[in-house]
Image 1 (cartoon, one colour):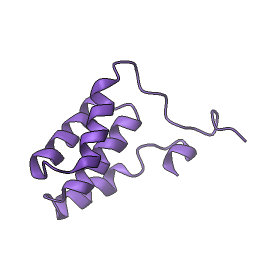
Image 2: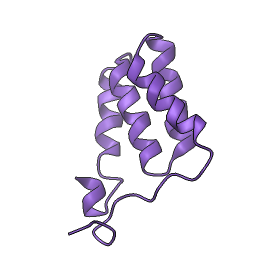
Image 3: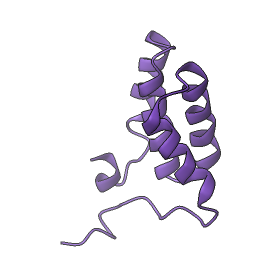
Image 4: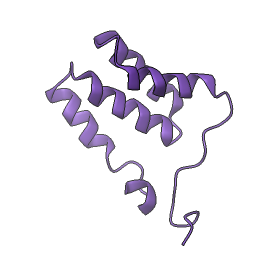
Length: 87
């Protein structure tokens, strides 16, 4: 929703608060990493995904998201905004 509204920073403080409260919740950290990568913050996303995998090495979704960010050397697509959403 925040991507559609053009405010990609909106969920970041919520992810960060969740991780302060539950620092070892690997799935939340992986979700945060995926989100960061999806809004163009590739290095931060990779860092969070790697941390999630240190916490839970068998978290397959984190492995997939990390592989996507690392494997794709091309720039990530721009965040979805009201200007580039199909009606």
